[in-house]
Each structure stands twice: as C-alpha cells, then as structure tokens.
Image (cartoon, rainbow, N blue to C red; front, top):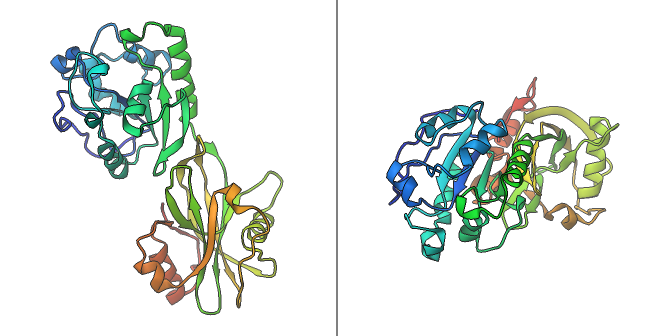
Length: 329
C-alpha cells in the first residue's frame, strides 16, 4: 500500500520522527509529543495510550505493534506524524504558533496519502482553527480526505474504549473507496478550443476539468454522457466520437473517498455557447468556459487531468489514438 523510502527524519524541532512514505492509505496525526513519547522517540509511547491496541483490534494492523515498532506500520499502509512539533506536558500548553498547517499540506502534496486521521479534535482544531465533529470532514487537502477520531490519550478517560473502537472501525470502513464509474468528454470546437468546467469545493480549492459525471444505474456510457453534457453545457446536438483517454483517480469528495474509473470521449462541435440546464453550483461547478491550447499551457490554474495540456497537444497533432491512453491523475 506504500512505496518509496520511508521518512525516518525527525520533524523540524520534534523529538519524535515522522513515519511516512508515498501512497499510504492513512496518516495518523496526533497533536504533539508528550514527555513519554519524546523520551522514547516514538508515537503514542505511553503504555496507557490505546492507539496501538485500537489499530490491532480494528484490523488496521494484523497484530499489536509496540511503539518501538512504529516503522512496521508502513507495511500496512499506515503513517504517523504530529500537528505540532514541540514537546509539552499536555496539549493545553501548546500555543497557536506551534501548529504547522503548511507543513502538513506539503507532506500531502509530496506523498499523496488517501487520508489523514486526526487523533483527537484538538489536533484538527489547532491546524484549521475550527471545531470539528468526529468522523469524516467536508474539508480536504487536495484529494486527501480528513477524518477526526477521539483522542486515545489516557487524559481522555471520559471516552470509553468501546466508543474509541467504534470510531476506529468507522475509519477502517471509510478508508475503502466507493466505486463510482464516470464518463467525460473532451469537447473541441472548430477552433480547437476545449470546453472545461470550473469546480470549487467547500474550502475554496479550485480546479478545471472536463465535463461529465458518474454513470447512473441502468445507463449506458453514451446515455450518461449525453445527459451530463445537456445538463452542464446545454449541448444536445453532437456526434459521439471515440474513447481517447482513461484515468482511475481515487479522491475525497464531500466526506467520502471515491474511486472513479473514467472513460473520456472525443466530441467535436462547430461552435457552442454554454447554457447549463441545471443549477451547477449545487454540483460545485462555478463556471464553464472555452480554453485554447496556449491558454492551458500558460495557466497556473489546476487542471484535471494534471497533464491535460500535453495530452491535448498530442491529440491535436496526431489525432485520436487507436487505443485509449492512460492520462494519470
């Protein structure tokens, strides 16, 4: 579930090392090192902390790991880090400036974990400045989902073990992506411009993507695409071209983790003025617009797929491929 070299470097100014690698299923984020963890240079090292027992009891690890075996967790797709680096007697001794949100966002951008699970509400609150409920969050970091667990610290004795176990089991189940097959279109006009839709999520992350959406039960691929292009673009008169690209992203969206194998078809039109027939903002779409290849190659906006400009150039120069091309994330 992971690859590459594990990170054994200590966090900046931290007595406890990060346990990280690319492509993990989940990175558990505690609040900060306590004295016991700092002395052991290990996460959740207090013998009265339930963290390692909860991992084993939910099957997230196949056996009970001890804190000094923390790097073994990587074998099971699990990483470990903290929201704040400074060692304190208790989390109440932390200051706002101790929390390093930018660091966590850099780790996500570099390592692309499926999810971050915050062990305690205060770890999440310290980073984002908002009080969360337990469970999956609407907020994401890029495509990475966020989940808040009850603290496993002995200081949180008011929450019984059975309740902690219930939330760790919920996390385990939530980490399994929901399959959502989708179909999309590269809509090109007579000037070789491409028609894209602009998405914005609940925390203001913005990206431009090809129009289309999930395949509903009982629909054919063509039926789905015609429905989506009618709803998003007001486009009804077109001939469906060949399937040219494929991708299979896994990403967090609206509190769920989705795996969305996409089939992307070529659609040619002479011209078209977008005229959506549904309330696009309800679908998190905030704009529809034509783009030239030069504009795509020059933009600093996030494009989906990320290599859209390069793949479009190849399409325009060489025509549709004989077999669909994997265009990655």
